[in-house]
Length: 492
Image 1 (cartoon, helix red, strand yellow):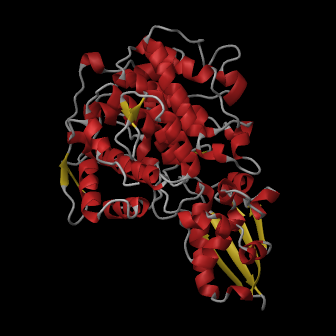
Image 2 (tube, rainbow, N blue to C red):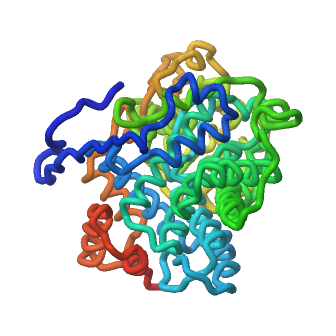
């Protein structure tokens, strides 16, 4: 759906009206025609896109969406501050001095380690945004790297915003084109070129250097889908952060003049042949002055759990409310998509989770916990919660299966149907396609702020929280990214 052009974007009662940003298109900034771009290797076409996009190509709706995603992403990272793996990554990063802030502190480290530590925090709770294409990905994983490089390079806020848009566009368009999960590879594969291009743009690399950054990022850093299979480890929340770290380092190597294997996508033993299979990517159709940016199709999560369970939570809570006493239930049937079944309901470990990571990828556990508590929060994944004998016994009543009709639905839907079969034979059913916060049901600013406050908790006073939110909503006008990030330091 194309975003309508309006003189002002009104955000509802009490919100400011943002003037439409001017379009600036000059001959030297125009990209080559689509037909010419398709004749060149994909890495070169992506580099041309990243090099050519301008702040003036973003309308007010896109600017507002970038700020919404930044606020949500930083809130998720701050919410994970106390988690053991996040703390470990932070301590490793802080052992080295550098120019990039570790979010939640006033201390700095190298750009690649800041991208890693901050990316780990952003991703760990499984609460950050999602894009659903051929598979589901988390493009906000890339924001941590963009912030680190922008600060280190002393880039302007407008340059940061453009870099974030580039990272989203590249990541999401590649997710549209290739189903790498079905071939045994992990979603952060496409974060590699996305971050390499965004970081390279902030480093002011030329198109040739950007193309080399893509090649260097991809060639040696392809992650296995084993990360999300069976009993899940700490790495489930850290793999995307590692991809960001590698891509930032690749951009630095390209700036120093190093070249990478090419053509990285089309070449013999390249990405198409070894990883993705064949496909087509029309870079000429990417977002810009006359085409919608993919970040408008990204969804914010209302619950800290894998995307395939978000609609199940809504459905399960509604079923539980109608049923009343859960002991009346003799069986529960959950229908999901093929990918939802594969990732959350096809393995025995999902009926007896031993780790937080397995629990937040377990459809039977999450549905049961939602029915017991009427909600899913970060506390839902405490060990005493997913080891609760009552919940584990209740989970044995649950069966999960793919419904091909649900798999066939598009439009960013992640459909789930929950049916409770009562002891008297009555069936209580709910089916949900889009949870609150999905692209089809977007959060308002007020709802985004409510989620942010929930993640920050009591670490700041309400006055300080309000001040930090106001500063983040004015991101495009900030003249000191280091000062802005430093304001986010937590009381620990």
